[in-house]
Image 1 (tube, rainbow, N blue to C red):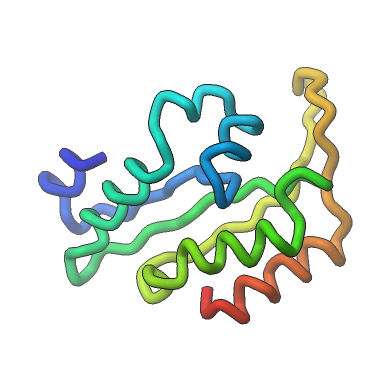
Image 2: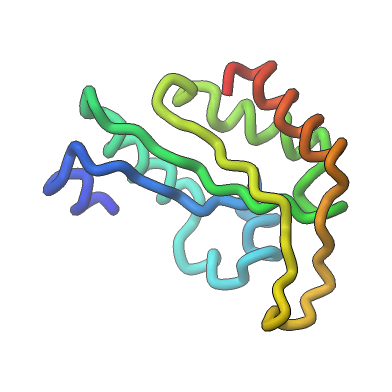
Length: 124
């Protein structure tokens, strides 16, 4: 990501985060242990230093896993310093026919709206 930021400063960036902490992120996406969240965010910040750069944060909401008020507040605090250059795309979990049995469930619509409102209160 750092190389992309240097080579293509106007490139739009999408970052699949899915959690406000490294610990929770690794529970959801085990391969996340290979790239610590601090490293991802530092690379994103480097990218965002250009005037035109923006970033999309992808966040799949999983019922009772990462859709809590606390998760929303932590995510809001994490992204608040970057609020003018990031947008969060909240994606309610949607198990497909080919999905592996993972135990995840989709959050209720009210939960998604509440999460979104908490982020909005953090100017995200």
